[in-house]
Length: 158
Image 1 (tube, rainbow, N blue to C red):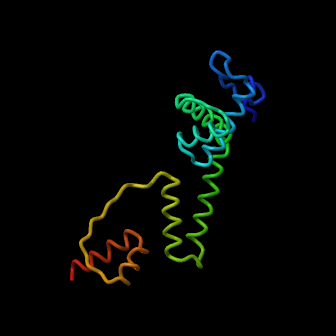
Image 2: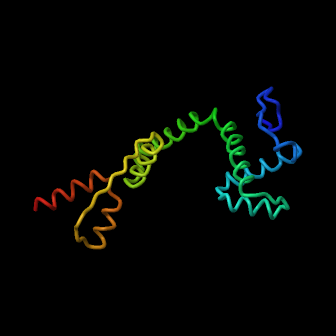
Image 3: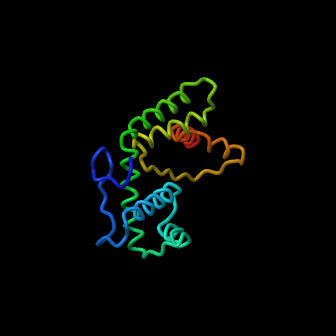
C-alpha cells in the first residue's frame, strides 16, 4: 500500500502539504519516517528531534499533524489482520494454559494475557494487612488472586 495514491487501487488518499508548500514526494518521505518512529514508540518531542537531526525543521504543530497522518497509515496497514492476530494470540495463550508442562505462573500469565486481549481486565485492588515470611511472600506473588483470597480467608478464620 503506497502513501501517494489518489484513493484508487487501495492507495491512501491523504492531504499532501498545506497550500502545496511541501512537494508530495517529500511529504510521503516524512510520513514514512514518522511512521517508523511511531512504531519505535517515540514521543512527539523525540520525533521532532529526529526530524531536526535529519535536517527537517518542523514546528510541534506540524509534528502533531504528521503523527496523526502516519497513524492513519499504520492503522490502514493493520486493520485487516487485527482479528487474525488476536485469534493467533488467543490460541497461543490457550495452548500454554492447556499444556501439562506449563508452570502455574506461566498459566496465570497466559490467563491474564487472554483477559487483557479480550478486554476483561477489571481494576481490582485488594488491601491486605498480613505479616509473612520472605519465602511465603515469594510464594504469594506467584498465586492467582482467587488463590490468595482463599489463603487469606483461612488465616482470618484461624
